[in-house]
Length: 165
Image (cartoon, rainbow, N blue to C red; front, side):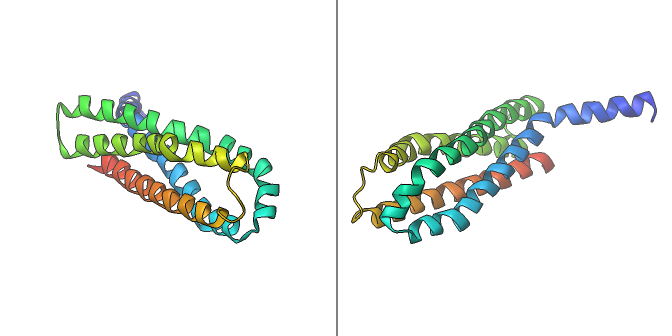
């Protein structure tokens, strides 16, 4: 490969670096949240309160350690992609608008965590929800989670638009 070809390839790669990282991190997060929604949440909801509370101290912290880095990487890369694309575009273009929407939606995932999931997860960890109320609480948790899955899938789609627009 000639030096000028390598230079052009590197320039192209660097010009898409943050959008690529954002799409990759959002794809990983979307897949993980979707798997949790389709596999784990129905399982948790099928358990008795006694079994749920026996398993939660082990699996709750493990899931947090798994999801926390993904949940933090996605907004960081989406915001960096938004800045890179907006600066490269020289203003508001379809590509920069997609990048802005991606960043806003991705940052909203962090807001949803602090608005709902942090306290809900802590209540479950403390066993503050009675066995009688657990099915209703898990149904509410599942509904909020489904909203989070929808948001991340839309953000991932928009990150792909940012790459190709």
